[in-house]
Length: 130
Image (cartoon, rainbow, N blue to C red; front, top):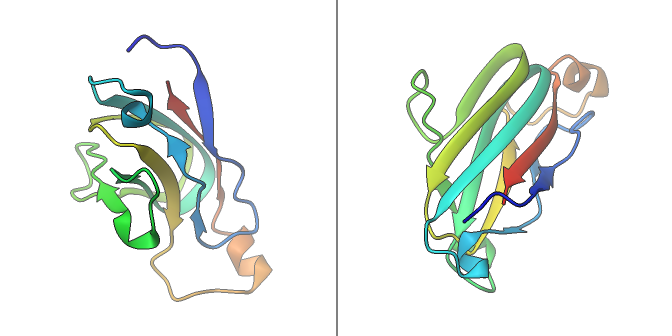
């Protein structure tokens, strides 16, 4: 697959505690067989975890989604972990996924206080290279 465009997977998460992004068409949907996907995450003072979920289903239900491992050489496991960091990270992974979605996960119990949430930073955007 040649790089043609970037698709916005997740936009600014200001004021949100956890977020599950919309499903985005991936390689398998378009019939590409290389399965190579790259996501770019832009974040500001972000504390929490970021992940990608994939599915092989054309009409996925909530039970069809599974975690894609984002290996960064620092944090084992499927999630990328941030501790009040600002910057940009990119992750490349393989799989003939039909759809992908970005997720923001916080480890603490659900917090509803907007001031507290505002201190945890934001994911500014997540792009998928197509």
